[in-house]
Length: 187
Length: 197
Image 1 (cartoon, one colour):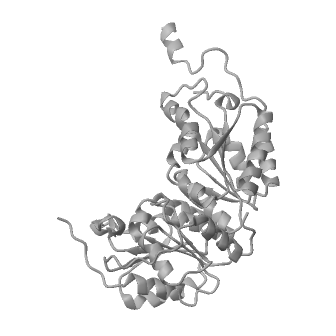
Image 2 (image 1 turned 180 degrees about the vertical axis):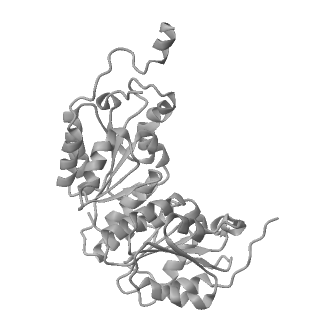
Image 3 (image 1 turned 120 degrees about the vertical axis):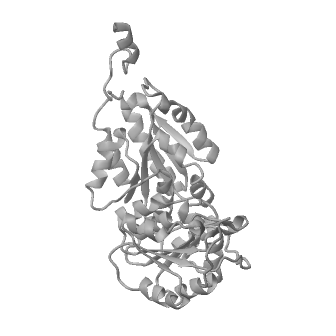
């Protein structure tokens, strides 16, 4: 019985909470500084605090999406109209975006995606693994640059840098937040 | 074999009628024939033509509508293009922009790829799908009603709207818009007074 219990345990070893709990607030401040005024998302637990912060901000138009690829189109239209958009999604959502990303790359629309990674660190759900493995190569294949952050300090700095490259240098960037930083999901 | 009902609205004439005296209206067109229709009605810096990214047209319109709340945003797209973005109806209904109008040029076929019957040609009603999501939606099959649709574009309204124009299924001579998306994007931004980068 004990052996069976061990096999279904969600983590092996001691579960580690996400390092530094106020990073979403720091990201919010960084994105506001970058004059982001639209946010579009498919929810992820790792993004929940950041989503709340934006939803409470009357100056930011928030769009909840049925699938992540819609956000690529919303961000393009927003830029045409003078707005700056950040997209929030989980790594599985990157797979939903691939053809739609051609809109951003061929038109050189500034694009900033913040992607919470699953399937790469102490993952319990095997269904998350294939897309976790494919996230970076799929983005590279369609022409989107990935910038990965594994610590809170690096994350805040990386998002600031990615925002500059997206909105000021016309780049298409995905910031990947390592699952190691997010902590292990408790089942 | 399933065959489509035939309709009498001429797509080019209808799109040209919708764009007449457009004022400050901004337009986005879905890939294929709707982009040719919009271009045939008169090229403009206030047009953004899609040549790909199928399923995106109405959602590009949504991002634009949020950014430019004081202008009417007209999305002209096809039944096949809109079918690929059905979830977008839910997204647009929830976002509820008051300045977004989607016009689906519905010929019941995938026109670019050999005129295969589409889902709307086999009975799916896009207006009913959109209405179920919360978009004010109507199907128009009488050519005499197109002028009323044009007038509606310039009237104030409270919710995102959709008009499905049932048009003749025909492949008209192509009127090709510029394919350089960076140029089209930049002239659109310039038109609104924004720096291109």
